[in-house]
Image (cartoon, helix red, strand yellow):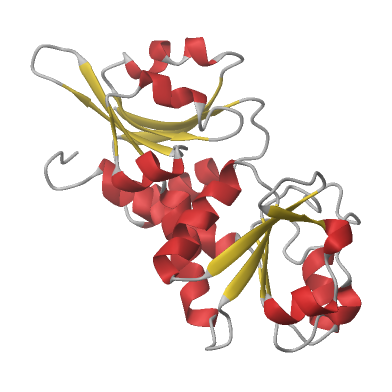
Length: 252
């Protein structure tokens, strides 16, 4: 049986496992399994990919960067972003595994954001500066949208939350939460923005999908802003993963 899976640590509830198992059942896809592989150290990863039944793996926190040391090749976007969430595994004729890393988060974000944009959405504030923010930056570059990072600590090229004011928020109409603030079970938490300056010119996008409407999005909606959670982004990247794993040159 062909195997797919998710590596990370710890792994609790998994969108990926539920999504793919339901997909297999609904589309009558047989002889493929998708499971969770919580590994405490990235050094445990080879035990998974040397199994010849494996032909694809998703990667989540905290290994999206560390896993690159084990890859033979990176796609263009993964090379630029320097983070991987999807790996295609192929076993060569001599038995050696060949691993290529991709970043489908960027694709999912861009494809889900694009239909929501209006002409004045020319600048974005990115809340957080982790791996998810890197994928968002790549997508914004593809769309020609300027951006500024926002974090708690001041650096030369970012704003702090305390610096945000009416003038900045009037200029940056797209606000993207790439931080985990507000994720279940901490649903009462939210990024500390001056929400009094949010209005119907703004689009608030939260990469979080659980809860469906974070406090960040709720507060934006109360001010008339357009809002979007991260669920469609997840669906789109999941389908892109499937396309990569089953690409024409390497069919199942």
